[in-house]
Length: 451
Image (cartoon, rainbow, N blue to C red; front, side, top):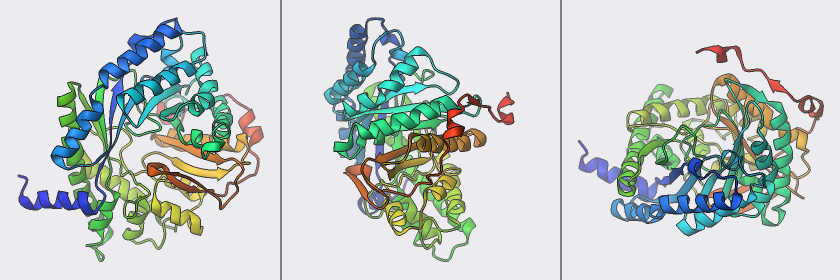
């Protein structure tokens, strides 16, 4: 039974502890929009998106008013455009412009799915899309892109890693007048999931329904606030507190998802119960780790504390929702987390430590600014390293690094809003060029043969 105490506690979480629904994301299949004529295909894409999502923003705002729950973003994800555009022997950039137009018509914040899945090789459509990513991201404001370069079952496409190092760098160069923002809208995955509601990596998988609603919750501030009440608890007690808090946070996501699904007349998919931080004071995953007992995020013990947090969040949330999916756990984006920014600025947190943390977090190296003169090969090797962690551990990992063109270590890129600001971090500059240039496929680990 829900009692008065539970209601008041939820109100306090929203008002004082930064609890919110980070996003409701509508996934839309574009498979029925495929056409060899690119103009006809784009017309179908625009019509399908605007028809399915015409009421998404209004319904989200209505739920906010009725329940008093902030819903920060209303977003869209679509079938990977490399699939949709494969029949058109033309540049896919027109699809990106169509996605942008449709997103603005619907009033959503971001749209994901300018994507390609190349973990085992390239089709002609994949190659065209990947080469067009820098232009597409520079030509749009709300279109997001992702490329999956590896998986536990297939291994890692090293040729794709090499190409993506160049694409990431070029995406930053073409948007240098906008704080290199193009690279902030591009994610390179291993083991990408089909139902992720969070940007920039969201796309609508081919195994998903024609249209669906997925929800991403937040709540790092709530977890930190609760932990403050248990300064002397042992680590088992800390885990239990996080589990109970995660349960309450996820129930809010379930309520919003089910309500939005009913009002929009589309199936409810999943709740991604990842703790998603913001640059706002009091809404930081890094500060949770420090509340657990670290002097500063990045200190020895950070990976262990993050593993505890991720496990407890999942265990607590799984009982609170009909379906858990997406990435689920805790995000560690540097620029979007006030505590991570502080730790990076004071030198407590390095890229090497962040890489270790990605073995146990929700996703990977996220929103990290690197010096603008970082070579393509080094970026490619960062992608390969992170993909290897995901491949061997059977988890989703990703890289979203932003080469700060014309800047060096210690400078800052500042986008404002949820994207925050990022201090440019030091990168190991010893060359991996020979390794990356070998190309080919890094074989899948032996446990991939389990069937």
